[in-house]
Image (tube, rainbow, N blue to C red):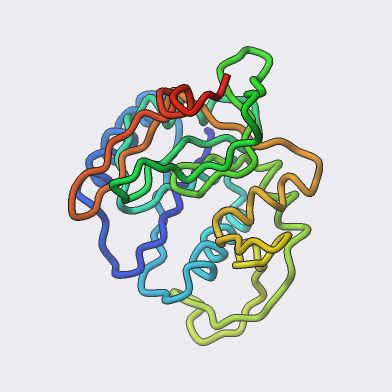
Length: 226
């Protein structure tokens, strides 16, 4: 049976109602398809990079076939989850609209000329946020191998023990730009000679004081990407 971890940092220990509904429907469909989906939440960690590192390590140590990062304040359709899960690309995600009245997304595009996958269903991007991102076992292992080691206090059953972890996610300055912890995964993947992909037909809703809804494909068309 294919085993998939859905990894979600929860700083305040809470998830959004729409996230819970999306997860419930995704799990229901996974059972029908014979896929094991295990949600994992890292709560009350003030360092988001450490929370993501812990999720990454749990997926790596647990020998999961895939790690699917999904933020706790998002909403998605279950079929989008499985569309990305079944793609052969080791790392593939979707655009998450930012919580802003000025339309923007957690995606870094390459240039005005879009580079499509062979079947023309994906486009290559320069970076993907971890709001809705699939990383398969191959990519997990490659990124793990190049990430720096550090020691940290264990949690859960290993509380109080010093355990070895990897700095998969961190905030860094690259070419004069401050790169957030979630985009660092894309940077590491590219440094290994691989490409980052997204499905432009999927736009993930973002929930805050209101629900932010977008259409990434229309957005890039409006900006002149071809």
